[in-house]
Length: 261
Ligand SMILES: [Zn+2]
Ligand SMILES: [Zn+2]
Image (cartoon, rainbow, N blue to C red):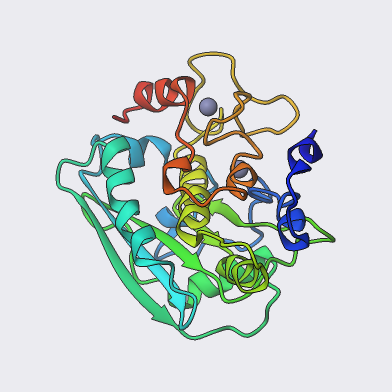
């Protein structure tokens, strides 16, 4: 079914791209026990969905955008993050993005415990008063879970933590003779991973209708929805920023019933 979309004369690198895994190991969790200080930000994926979506406990959000030199996302991607969060989260006191350039752990490819270690060594933004903190790392290395033609693009792994494997996007862009729109891929991936920390699908935010994919848990069964398990792979043959996938009405209904906008 995937390969039916490959009738166009797509180059080999794009062919490989079509078999990527939009997100990997979302539900794998981590084996690192929380430390006492920042334990509120070291909880399982999905457990802060209501805290992120609603203004009940936190009226603002601060996003720490960490990257190694050379792996910063595009400025357009950064600009798009803010409007996305403001459109879905009830944060009357606003959304703030702070950048943090960090040094490489140089142990890539990274398994999820190495990603956790990088967060624990570098994260500076945590819940503080009525502000909730979120960590997003743009990685200088690929995922250790890549295998063959299957690439992990991003993973949400704690209640307020996610990694975007920026190295994979840069490699694809450098090796393709077809234009690759990094903003489109970055934004589609990070929005999907945000969906997971918002508790989608049926993983922290309760279902308001039956739309969880039985074969791909935590994902939506509506093709084209941002939370469809292969939604990011579907934009690999586009260069149009307008093709960034959106939450479908069923996912939006879940988010709104759990305090979101
Ligand atoms: Zn996913
Ligand atoms: Zn959906």
